[in-house]
Length: 311
Image (cartoon, rainbow, N blue to C red; front, side, top):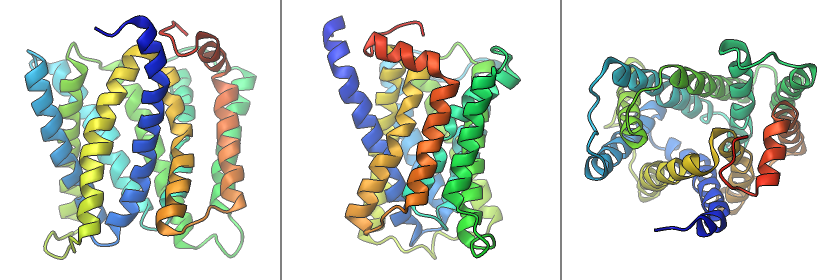
């Protein structure tokens, strides 16, 4: 049985691993989208990940099937927002922008989640400093988009807009699932969320007229698909569950700020892509915005040194 001291020592390692797995997923998506339609690619990813996580839940938990109305509602809300809408918009957006840029825009998720907590759940009134943090985040996305006269009508601007909407969908889904939380093991709930989300993505793929036959499943595409489904999906989420229990959601959200760094480094090493200065400046603004809005939680995280603390 893992001691408290060993948990404290291993937590930063798991945090870095999660950032590595999820940060590189943006690059893997870039590789897959070169040959496979976006919604179909996302749907198949969560078909496989959902089945594997459900099998794991069935082995490790007595309760792995939804039983109550709230169980199904939680899986439905999570599947529609956290998997379906988020990945549909993200994959469509990444058809026009690089994975590194997409990761920067997605790093808005913790900031948007905190804002929705304040405005929708009435966690507490948004103070002026918190409002300034939100403004910093919006400015960061605008800087990343680089809306110069020559770029306003570009496909890249549309791609950034879609990725921004994916971050909004994920943040709304995070808030909504907490409001309809079920008495259901988190691993089991996540498995059904993945499967419901995969069904939503398949529906969208059919509506868009995407074809499996027209896809080119090259070795590199198969490798990216396996990585997304097994490493980023299954292993990543199991690490996520463990860290969620140890440090709580506020601190765990900080992983979103390591993802763009990992994505930028891997994009440079694998695809030869380099982030521009405007993208880096936008990321700094988004990070500063979250720091202002969640300054108390960040200070608590630093003081606690990753122990399980009520921040």
